Figure 1 (cartoon, rainbow, N blue to C red):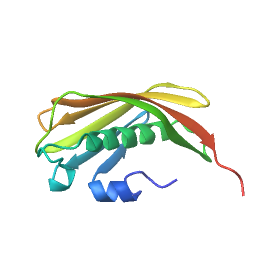
Figure 2: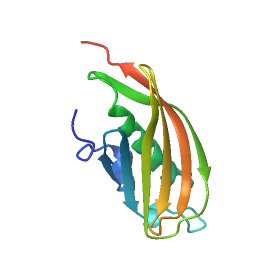
Figure 3: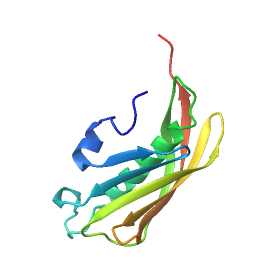
Figure 4: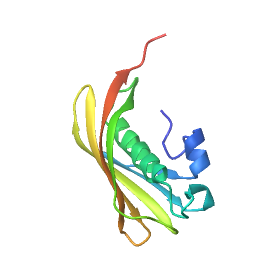
Length: 131
């Protein structure tokens, strides 16, 4: 598998975020711009959600066996404060990892390290079909 730092996909390109993977964690970050704002001139909630979902998926992949993938089963998200400028950074960590399910938590903070959103989620481990 290619490094998540080099992996590109449409939502990552559109939102213009980066991904860094650790041993049982991952971080997704971006600089806020007009493309991230809702009609009230604050970052749309989907931006923090996308960062946390992607970071959780990248963290889960650290424990997924070779030849398998993971996919989101559910994520419970809480929004704590609005963000209008600066950066957003979501850090995800694995809580528990089984053979079929990985449970994670994530936090999104702003440039001043204030909590913007938090989440817990579960990801399914899926073996890819052999060709």
